[in-house]
Amino acid sequence: MGGQACVLYGAAEFSRDTDIAVLASPDNLELLRAALRELQARRIAVPPFALQHLLRGHAIHFRSYHADALHMRVNVMSVMRGVDDFETLWSRRAQLIGDDDFLIDVLSLADLVRAKKTQRDKDWPMIRRLLEADFAATEHPSVEKVKFWLLESRTHEMLRELALAHPSFVNELVRIRPLLRFAANDVLSDIEKALHQEEYAERVADRTYWEPLKAELMALPQTALQAEEDV
Image (tube, rainbow, N blue to C red; front, side, top):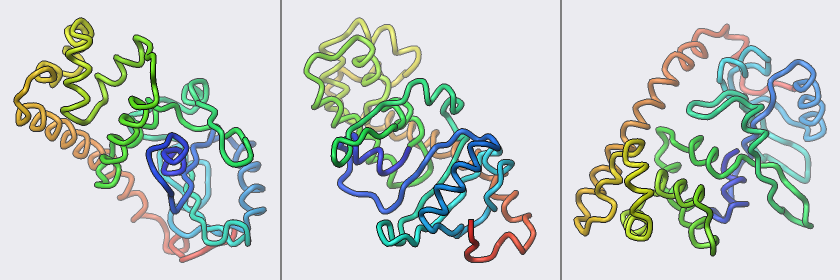
């Protein structure tokens, strides 16, 4: 659901960690705990590895000490801002091919883009690359794909090309994404200002979402704040 997914979609060359979305249930967490033990993983940050924290929307962070994945960070989440519940995400998942033709379940491109709308500077260029890579790789896009690009693209060039080719879709979608009224224009400043305002609003929403969750972490007992802990 993170950088490794972006690599598989062709929008990144590498990622230093592995972000995983999991179904937060007691049985599934025991399976996850067993997998983490195989990785010789240790929890490296708050909160503790517990169902209640995953259900609240916290990420739980681990580091692998297995020789085949030495020092790889593994970040686990179940609830994320702006995306649907796990069952819905799973129903829409994509299966992409990794090394040795191994199939890997990843967030659908649309869900990954939504999950990347955070306050972090590094996520917004990644959204742009995800959309551009998808646009370049699709020879005969469906109607749904074109509408997805119009609703999510982050550059004036791509939006203008789409708007000129599909004006009826622009008229349909402008109620959802108002900046599309500038998409076919030659005036670069209008669309760039609108894109900046759109990004700023998402960053503010993400900060607002995380403020109470950060307060919860700060209120945890000191015993939960130790540097590393066995799974």
